[in-house]
Image (cartoon, rainbow, N blue to C red; front, side, top):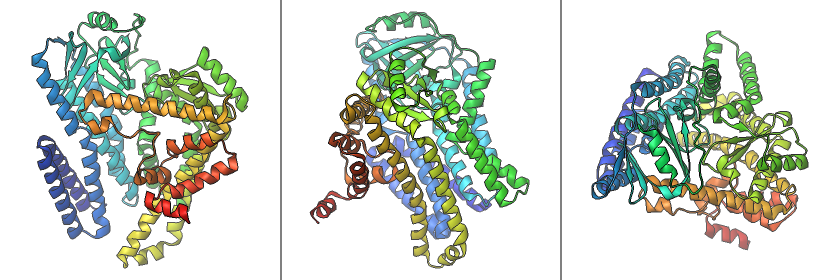
Length: 577
């Protein structure tokens, strides 16, 4: 990537950021017009001043910058903020004073700087021949920036109000606000100080939380449906006692001790979470390895061997990495443990470990390279669902362990990368020749690009429908229980997502969007069937209720990948043939 192109990307990204912010401040119609005119002008300019292929790099960066910062410069959140600011003077309220210490935000800046700095160093030193890696590193850095900006704004501008008559907490910051009804408070607990490694967005996994901790003082953790709020009130004891009165059940008053970040146990957590940040959330670990191998002038076959061994190493430690990244706790007793052991015994995977992630997200997952290292993880929200549903989720994940689906998906990913790489290597001259036929070249490149996620989707969806089918055989009520379990899980997550949006937005369309168990329009179905790792839930539930044998199940899935991806009028014609 030449210096001129790098400067172009930086300038385009800055212009996009400025225009996105200005559009955020303008009325809706003016905002849409500004974005349309500016975006179109930039695209036309880039296409006219650069080769067609070269122009798409800054164009894609422009789009990534816009969508990344749109999460901060969100008009719906701004409307909610304005509404709540207007509401405050007209009601009786008390300000919840928050402790603020510079060292708390400095800690976040340091951690963000380390994570981003590693990626930035890789970006500066990676050879130009690894253009794709440069592109992905820039994407990662761009997506980190909005989170960091939001955190700085929260530290500087957040005010918390308690409205005693309305029994509501209102939190107003620079870019967003939240209105939290106390009758929806599900739990409250105290922690001795912020758990920085749990709260920093660079280290989080499978959680929905908002960090308003601005000092290394006592933290109050308030859990609502779909979201968890962390605060550091100046008078933490008083507010804990006051907010506890809104709980339907008494909560333990014991303060959870949080060890300082320099404690030896947290150093271990930091290493695991740091590796997770650069190897799973980002690609700096792999890029750094390639930089070292290139610096050592390693031959191409040595690079392939080392990268393959590195991949095997990551597969081997995947279970421990996810356990540490999510701060999951091992379950060794209780009702959930007993349910799991019964399922594991039926599945023939009695050595499988069960962990629980403290999260308001409804989900479960299986990890581990083989049965001996198999681990199933559930969120605390999921464990609160009905026993029938928990059994169904555990049965589904148990089949993933039994059939080594984690390893199958990773092997499929590596195989596809090898096939694409070998194909480009073998037909490089032909591809180079096609650059003289621009339209044909672009079509072929897009086919190659789309073939990768589509192929991975085929493999992943195959393992998912097999886990549904075989998991049902482990349940007392068979396929109907699996179908009911998937439905309850999806509806619970839909409700939590809708409630989380309700706290911070006024967008009625977002609050009443299509349920994930309903059949969507043809474009949504096309995207879900062709690109996502899971088939659409409506189809999975529908298929399970038919109680068909395995042969008919997988054949129905193959047919659905084609028919359900078509517009309805074409689908009706194909049914009539």
